[in-house]
Length: 223
Image (cartoon, rainbow, N blue to C red; front, side, top):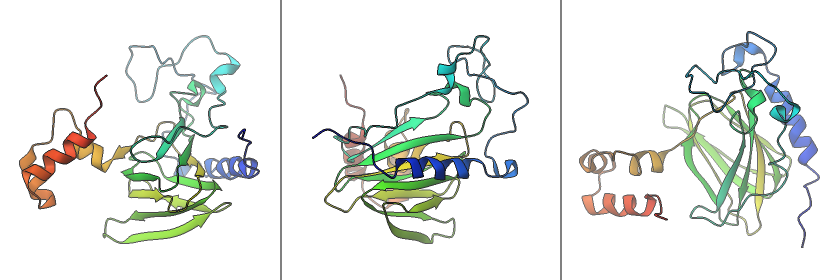
């Protein structure tokens, strides 16, 4: 059966726009100093953001990649499709971005953080168990469904899990052009160079064999 856009998609876009129009004092990125600064993704110049390119077109501000669901056929059963400055160069210096997240039945967006942005999700379809953990080690969790909104504060560990038997999807809004994502498992067990085993065994109170097993499962697949 051909996929058709969720009737909630326009509402999701509106919710994201309202979030992204929050007062500048709440922005995750510095204020812009000119009308536009379209990212030159090929430039070797390193700045806090991207250097501006000279020739600008309407396509620098356009992206259609959030309309269709992504492929969730992977280990976690979820996939994130980003619409950040790397996909939409016109977002450079504007302090906003979006993503679409799709979840297969049983799919998990594993515990992770966004060091540079608060995230707000709007559920397009399905039901999700979501939550974040405060620095005081308190879990704030809720079950959300189509039409609901949930916020994950900047920098806090959070997750989303589809415990239903049908697919789910959300639109996410961020107050950063490039929020960054650190998956806890990948960061600790698949870093390059590796985090020493004696650090991980002591931190997680497990043996070296368990650490090596996790590392082998998370290691990038060789082509």
